[in-house]
Length: 194
Image 1 (cartoon, one colour):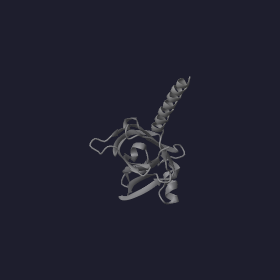
Image 2: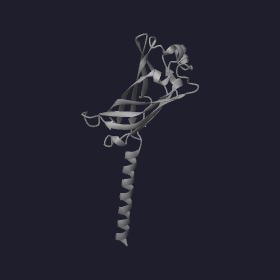
Image 3: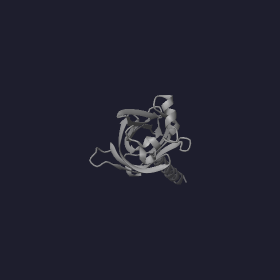
Image 4: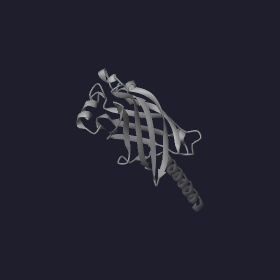
């Protein structure tokens, strides 16, 4: 009787331990919004301008031992785009630019995350996925670096895009002499285990 009880207890504790380990690996990382940023860099009249999106949410499920099963997504609040001046901020929300009334969110969803060939293990990855802005979805590919800072993991990605592929800047604003077509989206996400 006692040996059966001990055996049952051992089996139950082993199952619980396996379940806890699986949950720990599968749990998404917790994003620290105060330390994370999404910025857009572009040229206006050939002068570099950097603006930021003040509100966004990111979900990252990442284990450096299994990068092929990693997933990432970001939803960006278009109305939070900040060029540093209220007048400019109001202008880019209009139909010719982001058309925020009709398309209040931009999003990115990864399809693959793979270790970069030749890079030190756990440090650099090649990411592909769909970026959707103003209702237009485009396949993007970009490098991602990952580093540990204490208990945190820091993800840095630089995503080059063409604004006209998303109809950002219509009508007279299609002219790339005023605002360049090339835009770089810089993503900096700081996470901690859930």
